[in-house]
Length: 50
Image (cartoon, rainbow, N blue to C red):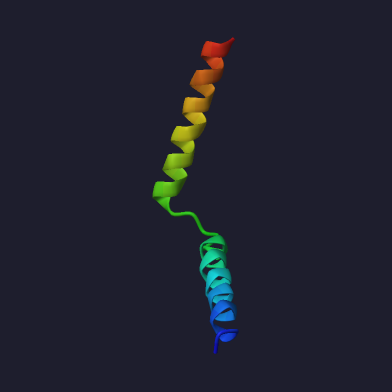
C-alpha cells in the first residue's frame, strides 16, 4: 500500500494539471473583448514608447 500511495498522488497530479490545459478552443464574446482591450492597451503603450 505504501507504493500505491505515491503513484496515486502522481496520477492525480498529472490529471489535475492537464485538465486546465485542455480547455475549450472556442472563445466567448467576453474573452474576445478582453483580447481586444489587451491589444488596444499594447498599442497605446507602444505609442508612448515611441
